[in-house]
Amino acid sequence: MFCYMNKRNILILSCLLCMSGSLFAQELSIKYNEKGKAGYADASGTLVIPCNYDAAFPFENGMGRVMKGEKLGLVDAQGNVVVTPQWDDLAYDKEHNLYRVKKGKNYGILDGKGNVLVQAKYSYISGFNRYGKALLAVGGKSTPNQQMKGKNYLMNAKYGVLNADGTIAIEAKWKGLYEFTNAVASNTVGYGMLLKQRIFNIGDTLITDCEYVGYDSKGWFASNAGVMDAKGNIVVKPNVARYIFLPKNGMARYYTFVKKQAKFEVGYINLSTQVKTKMTETNSNGTQYTESTDFMDNIAAVAQNGAWNFYDTNLNLVFGGYKTLAKGSTSGMWCAWKTDGTCEFFDVQGKKVFDGAGYTDVFFPRNQEGTEAQYIAVKKDGMWGLVNKENVTKIPFEYEKVNDVRYGWVPVKKGGKWGMLSIDGQEIVPAAYEDITSTSAPNTKALYVKKSDKLWYVYNVEKKKEVSKGYKGGGYFVDGIAWVRPDNMKVEDNSVYRALDGGTGVNSENFGYVIDEEGNQLVTVPVPTNRIAEIRDEIIKKGKRQLTKSEMKNMLLRMSVRSRHYPLETPIDESNWDY
Image 1 (spheres, rainbow, N blue to C red):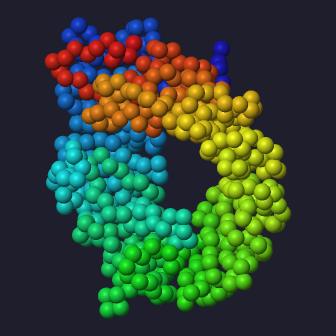
Image 2 (image 1 turned 135 degrees about the horizontal axis):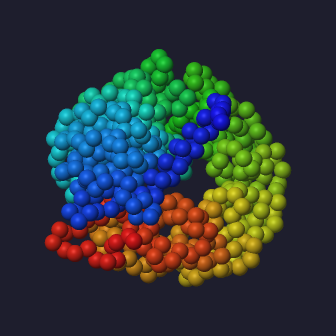
């Protein structure tokens, strides 16, 4: 009898085989023989990969790290050597499905199948950040950082940027590489991001998406640096301006000191033409960067001769003559007051949204899209209310403060106490608390309220009451789960918690417990709050129930496995073994 298979059946069978192979790999456990050599056994305890290695590590990505002598390699679930043990370090990056490797003093990258993606010829390659960017270095000498105890940096190294696909975004040839991470003029119309001076320590990685970065050949001061785009193209040369803001819509705002006039010149640089245009100037003493704004789509504002004027990206005057100005940094809206006290609301294109007669203050929504973007908190006759973009009142002007809408909820203050309303004015939480938090996700059933004892309590909006004891702080509820920190948080100083805290000591401020929206404690031992997403996934897999002592212990051991250290002469305590 013959069995015929078409291409579709073959494809399905191939997928099933791959899936079963991957699942089988995850079931393999490390096994040592009587000579201390390591291999892998299946769930029944049967040896499937011979004990030919000096050490073995849990399977990841369908492969296990193995060691021969002092060198690391990779084997698959059938015991085939995928990567010959040759690396001094070999670390898997699950998010980007690649391996960072090191041989001697040189770093390289392997893809998820173990193939060489980036040759091991760099003096440093950092971990990839969430944007898929890594710091790349050539040359340099490992030198203690005198400002950061226990940290080393590569003196005289030259830096660049590496993409997670293995391509070089910016060649490693700059002693100075700077990111736009220095936030200035917060809560003002002049808010923006400047280049920040930074010495990269070994172990550091990049922070931003590197759409634009600063560079120079000196490597000590971010002022007067040039600017490159994400492909390494120079868009602003060094020494064009002392301070350059993160470019927006092809234009970079700048401030530069003019010594003869003892003033700062303020203007914009067109990235396409590299033409620098002065727009205004300000006193050199204590500049707050509030004389101009970044371009929000087509327009930017500049303070000139006592009035605010708006310009397009060609630096043509669009409209102006305003006395004061408010800008929604993320909502993409402006509010400008005229000399007669009336105000106008308009969008980033310069199109008027509505006139705001009688409004004296504004709190813009923090989101550009969705329900929240349609509502604006405004002040009139000394009281706050909520209007929509048609200037229709949704919450009457009878509150001492109204914050922005988050997922249909609006924090309000009345009689000196905070509560929560829906956008149509229905009470969600009574105005009875010293403070209240917003929500960071839709369909949330709980938030935090602060009482006179200065502690935060979980308030369940369905039960309309507090459902927990007081905490010193906590994180937002996501998927019904959040971390909280009690007032007297204590964390044992042992190898596990030291590893989780990333240092030689344990700071209790970095740990907390985990609760649900009913106030139930799901994890009763301290956990690192910066790993809450990972912990949340573990709890969800268990059905959102309280984890057992064994489950909690094993979870912490897995989370700390790469960073735990033990003195060679000291037996490892029973509590440090994951069974």
